Image 1 (spheres, rainbow, N blue to C red):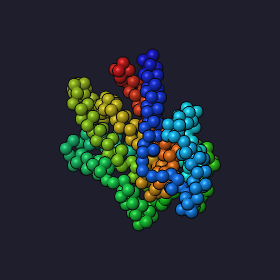
Image 2: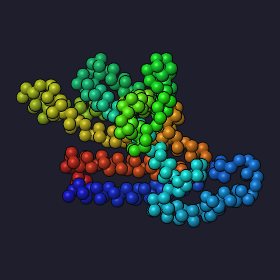
Image 3: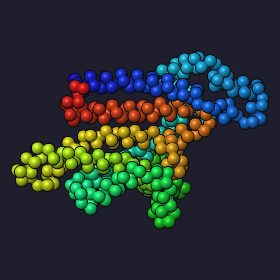
Length: 339
């Protein structure tokens, strides 16, 4: 019952938060310098008042801002994100097209980050102040500090250009056709199509951008895991278990790591939300047709519906992931349910 109350409370927060985000983003898109008319029409058309007036009337730019806001909220209530000025397609359809690409990349990246981060963090804590600990901490600092775009270029240069161990940009090699869309995630769709060779090719295309995106989250997860493992290993119940003669492996995997990883859930959840927002530079460098690339193109074209749609999607990602993390916390730790 406590879990149900917590879910209802979080969903109420979700509705209020999305309304606030929608309002703020709408206001900001109107305050940002730039003219969507000039960004989307040629110079010849800009010199024709009739074409300019028709463009403004089509996209509602001729109405007062308060009327535009009212229309915008009405469409939002009906789950209509409007029509992209740049493409002429519904924004919802554009997001449905590009979101699976970002989702697939984010799943791969957060999986790599979580597995490596937890492994490195546990090893670092168990080998405290040793050479291994110093090495892992150094890797974590580099992962957090290295500029994403520079790391992406390094990965492409060494693994693709010099060594030829990984494919270049895009989601699939030219020798394959895109799989029939079921989930929109190429690896899964290729497997559903019964083509493991195509699935393997799509998985290889995930390697470089996924590793690039995983580096930052991996560093945070490793540092958080190490810190929590050290705290847990110094508690009374761990010392008691040691005194009873439990082996080191049983002590770590059956008693310490479960409690140490509870706070790591938050880091993993926030990292996943950040990845789902679409990392613009990585998607641009690897020609990955995801949310980040769509957001970049919308900004350059002053495409207000596209910008607002991306912002709402990113906010929804973070909020939903935080709700899931809160629920998991409530299941794992009963004390959280009453807060």
